[in-house]
Length: 207
Image (tube, rainbow, N blue to C red; front, side, top):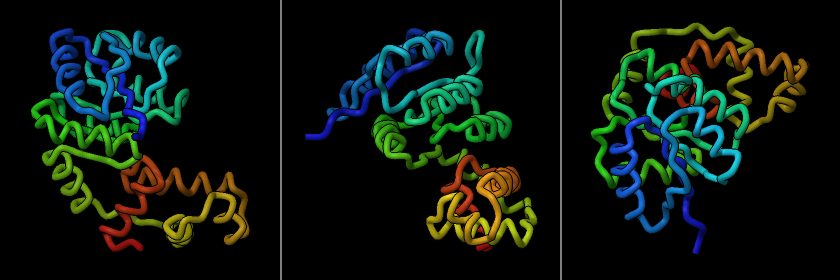
């Protein structure tokens, strides 16, 4: 039997945390390791608890959810983040994904879908609420980012599974230059990571 997925819940409303805790505890492969009512408390708990997934709201007193996500991804890169919120504005969604959130769900999500999203997020796979996915798809159709020829070459090599060092060797540039190209690619495509950039590029016919 594999170890259960350990989750940290972050929401400033105790009733919401209690409800989520109760729901998640009914899944045999998910354990709520800790709960936090603020981002600062969550960061302190991450020092003491080993978790695979942080399930967090976005709007909280003090440090907001987007800054929390950025700090988690910077300090605990092995920990994945699933946003669970009532907010779905472009600014909120893009901000959370750009900060490093893996998944983004709204609080009207059904229990079974929430369980599946926690499992997928723990494995590094993205899950989005349907309305959030539609929003991102609409943005992709309305914007036509122009990738330079070198950016396309970099992205094609990344899609082939090459590391930054391998891409640099193939193109006769340094790994730092490859990283800069990737940052430009992420910004143009609205992608949060390499996998997302490749997926978006394929969907839009850029590769």
